[in-house]
Image (cartoon, rainbow, N blue to C red; front, side, top):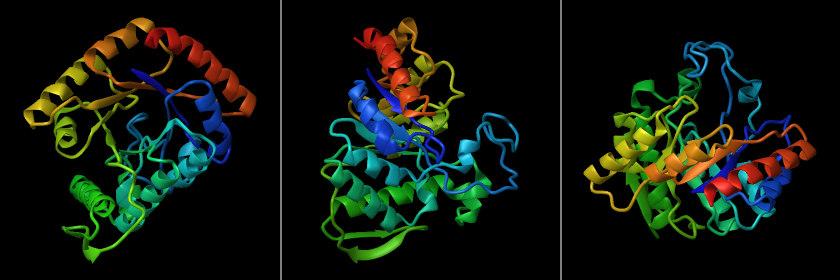
Length: 282
């Protein structure tokens, strides 16, 4: 099991090019950042945490662009994985997004992972022309089209939401870009992951992760997938017994938030986390 850091990036926090080297120096394996391009001031969609239109944190309004953030982090690190938790691909043009991700992965020497979500904020999605009832299909097509652009010398795709003829585009990512899906631990979501992705990122509301990890592995095998899915669990404070149970159930990664109010606060928090997590993960 590996331990990583997720930063709720904003224009008020320590910038990624200052935080990511601290994450790497503290011995963590990965650095994850979120995406929200904008938040409509009037929303009908309820936040899954609050159950209302109220947001639990004003950083939702101030989130930094994830790929600019990860490019900045790539320039000042050498080892850590760089990922999103989660990005919203359907809010971008798929050809342009494929180029952006491939470029960051090229500059990072193959350290990029794409964590994606279906999108809880239907009002935000609507501003990008995403039909709420078709967001899963749209995301599947985006992933298929981007994979074709990353893989094929002459890529083409013909779908409901994405269509382009034979095309050239470089750089290609150094390897296949892993795709993780951040979503609730349901059979519906696990089936989608088994068909379209490489693993699961839990949500802050998921409980019973041990049982959910076992269920995902079952659905994974039912769909003919070999090996095991990657399972990235969001954690709060490290607990050795819980980490041991998760590890036995197949959880591959745990992610911890960081105090990014200042460089000194972040450094102290990371050192404290590393001390607490290290013995539990060895």
